Amino acid sequence: MFGHRARRSAFDREVQIEIEILRKLHGEAAAQVAREKAARPSNRTARRKVLEETARQLNNEAAPRRSLIGRLLGGAPGP
Picture 1 (cartoon, rainbow, N blue to C red):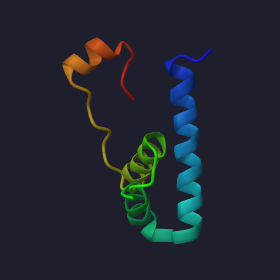
Picture 2 (spheres, one colour):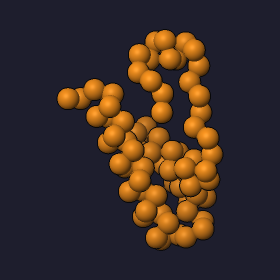
Picture 3 (tube, helix red, strand yellow):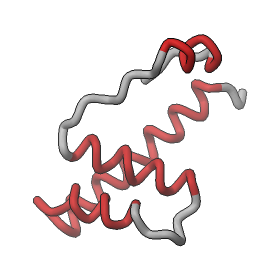
Picture 4 (cartoon, rainbow, N blue to C red):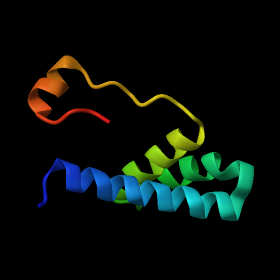
């Protein structure tokens, strides 16, 4: 119920919502705005991660690969 897949789908949903909002409000500058918002010190960790992933997707960057240790200790497959 509250496993990795449920958390991941909620995270992905938040990222997609953020992408839609930033594109609507800022157009081409959406990725830069997401990076600026992510850098704010008042953000909590989850919000910062959503904004960082939003900026990454808006820039069409490849997802960072998890290290071997991270994959072994994490237990769940990477994105």
